[in-house]
Image 1 (cartoon, one colour):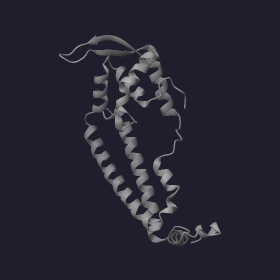
Image 2: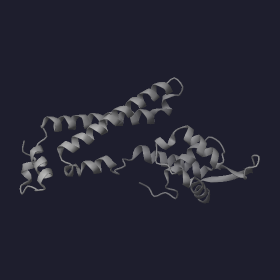
Image 3: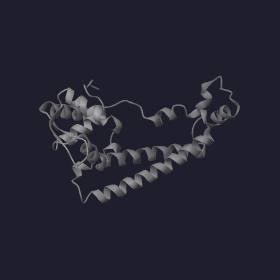
Length: 209
């Protein structure tokens, strides 16, 4: 991944709304929250003003005016610059075209699942599968509600999220089937290790049925 002058994903989100029209930071946050962008990318709202300041510092945003609404403090309105638009487009090109190898938390847990023992692993995976099924159903419902209201171009990230949830659910369901039926190679050695703490001298025991 390219090293960027403003690397926070919130910076990408700010550029996306500034591309539409000039806004002050409070309005940017309101629009992003309304569109649920915090579900699409990791966003730390408390750093919004710092991110906007950094985008201005590096020439991606520029202040156009300060407005005063009633008794509230003055708010600076920012618009995207040509450099900001170029940065935004380059950033999106990178995100769409480059594979990010950062491992998910679930993968880290799977790499150490042996410490739980088969029975506890089954229990926790069943719990996860239930959450995945609920999440997928909520995503399907949201997608069906949004389809008549928005062009598909603006829903592809929701489609992707649903596809990833369903794919993970299929994998977890298959792995659970192996665990509950005892079809997973080495499950007896795994259970013995968990119950006694005795690690086998021959790792081949974990691949024997």
